[in-house]
Image (tube, rainbow, N blue to C red; front, side):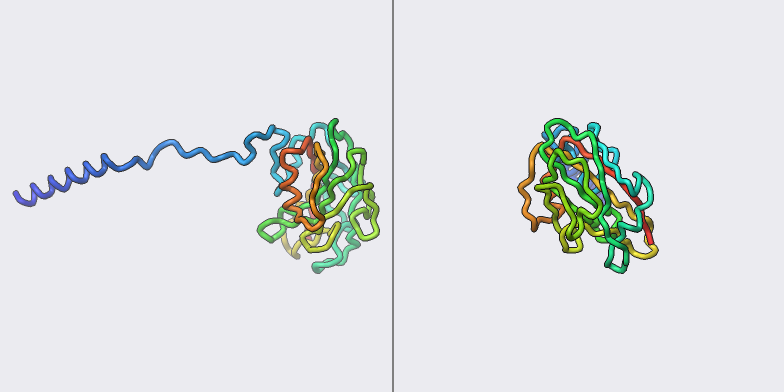
Length: 216
């Protein structure tokens, strides 16, 4: 009898506590959209540029490789265990949208085993009237359009550095991305490519990419 009464009392207390406890199931707290307030053309995924992103007619090509093709040997690095010529590729573009004040060109390897990819080249404040970059423009002694500036690549030197993935690794993607901007950029030459990418948010009118694959 005593045990039965004690069990009933405990059950009553448990039910009372359960009814007072806050529910763990409910509507999830909405996650703030970091792109809130930006239109669809201004929303960026800088870390891994996508060839299918909104281009608004902007096109990017190279005479030495095609989108989805093989990265040419002439653009392989001379360093990091590679012995290529390390020549930056010729790049051409068309369809720069009205209102463009400057252009940015980046080269990025999202497959580099660093945890954050590897930025190979960042050129900014390219004049809106420019239609391309000559072969070797990113190398020492190369010629960039007037006013264009380059940041250090992730190897720590200014300008272009070619591909040099680890031996035996899967083919890496080398993504060249062109951005058309509604303003010029006030970015110091000591800035990182990631900081440059951050500054593209909200001022990008169009972007397009060209990707080549390379392995050793």
